[in-house]
Image (cartoon, rainbow, N blue to C red; front, side, top):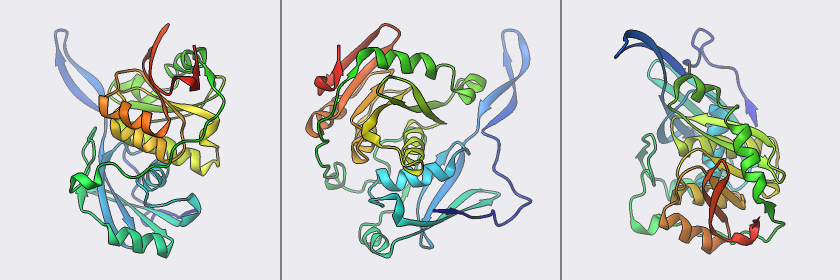
Length: 273
């Protein structure tokens, strides 16, 4: 994958946070809030989707979205990636393998992403649940690894620390040591950024677990399982639909992962209590 020069050197990505005047009990003060920009993902010259996202790690986002949505089966099928920065947002131009592009055109759908959306752009009930292969069995992690990762995550969210308004998705090894963190205003976007970063660094998704600072929705489980992540831990609650999908594919889904507590909703043998 080649990251090309920006087409206009005078234009740069917006800052992921902006300063704005805010009024409260103490009067008027300046406050930092998270920025979100339209990000269009284009494949072989054809625009496929527009998402609202934090303007950080957009290369990871584009690759992760392509993998988690089944547009690409392998990172090697992405040949080129360009960021085109416009006044209205960012266009990510990708050149992908012709076979994948033909497949994309056959099932192409027009959709507009929204922050925190679920199943954006799905046009029929038949498109909700994509067929997913069962995850292979693997060694269990200790429950203490979940809390070890959580303790580190709280110190590795600079954008959240500044604004209090973004989600994070993190990757930890089996011992609970955080290896990478990605942030975004949208929880799905943060997970896609993490998936893209894992793929770019050629990390084995089965060698650890993902931790997200949000609830665990059906789509979050689907994205994790589609790229081979065997354990998804969330600081908030899962949905019933997410639990059922996790049970079907053999993904361990843990919710309410907070200091000293957690609840495992599916495939408990992957987490040693």
